[in-house]
Amino acid sequence: MPDTPKSQARRSTETGSDGVLERGEARFQALMEATAQLTWLATSSGALAPPQPAWCAFTGQTDAELQDEGWLQAVHPDDREATRQRWRESLASGSRFQARHRLRRRDGEYRDMLVRAVPVSDARGVVQEWVGVHTDQTELTRTEDARARLFQALERTRAELDQFAYATSHDLKAPLRGIANLSQWMEEDLGPSLGGESRRQMELLRGRVRRMEALIDGLLEYSRAGRVRHRLERVDVGQLLEGVRRVLPLPASARLDVAPGMPVLVTERLPLEQVFRHLVGNALKHARREDVHVRIGVREDGDARHAFSVADNGPGIAAGFHEKIWGVFQTLEARDKVENTGIGLAVVRKLVESRGGRAWVESSEGAGATFHFTWP
Image (cartoon, rainbow, N blue to C red; front, top):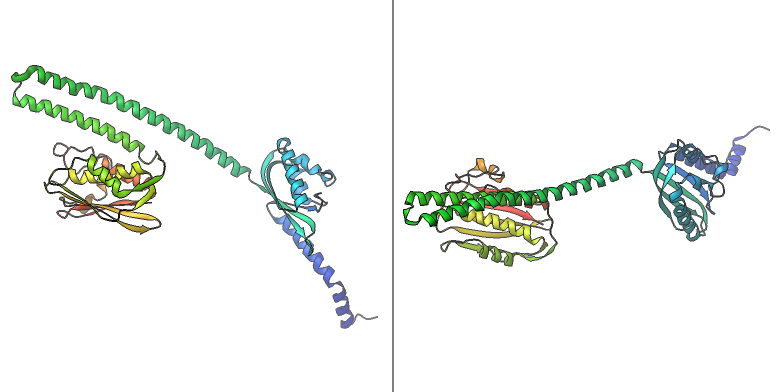
């Protein structure tokens, strides 16, 4: 009997659902074989039903060896029982399965695997099968282990550097104090026989000693800036600045004005205090005038940050030096004129940038300077 279009349509209708199902299964099988991950299927009871081409190709096991939890023989002995228990718990509850274990590859090497499996349920919610995947994370684990070892080595190096810095600063400052004391004793012993020029030289010597001590302290502070972290606490910036005002030697004719509305931050108190102390001290030191006026302001800068400013009415800074002044040992005036280590602004920028902020200056010659910094 000829195969008419009507009979072809009828046969297509009768076999259509089976054909779609077969194509879907074939497509899923091809997807499992094509993916770089190790995929597998399990029955509702948790058995790996054959065929399991991806599993067998990776582990070297046969389909027959997978029965009765035989697949667990490819799991590292130290991880086997935990995997078995977690798998059984998921089977009992019908909840998603996730674990990490080492899986033996066919060449005998164990690979670190992240394992996930999800249940496939029917319309009534009854689990029909499980679809699982093993993701090889061996290289990621090795990278994380190497990073952890590197971090530990870095922490040891930092501790050693801190210890070295403290010991060195103590050893360097001890002879300096001896020199200062010796010059003082000589001046007292010689008494009236010591001329005015000699006294000036003695005072100059002690000034150099104080500068060296300040330089050593500055280097120690710079080495720790950005590395040492302190606990977070509520900091009233207005009260903090009052403390800075009391600590700094403020000339009687100088003015330090703090704008109203200073915020209360949850932050590290000491680094923020160091930043203000250096900036205000820098303004007072380089003002070159008796009626120095320092103004501290603040505004919100978005992203949960505040932008602070410390402005002065000093001689200002030429545009060509706006970046240079942030370097270590950089000063715009000779140290014989103004006692300065050239480290303070470098400490400021390091403290600010290590907290995710930035520091910059706006100034021109003869128009004062305004130092800005953002703080989270």
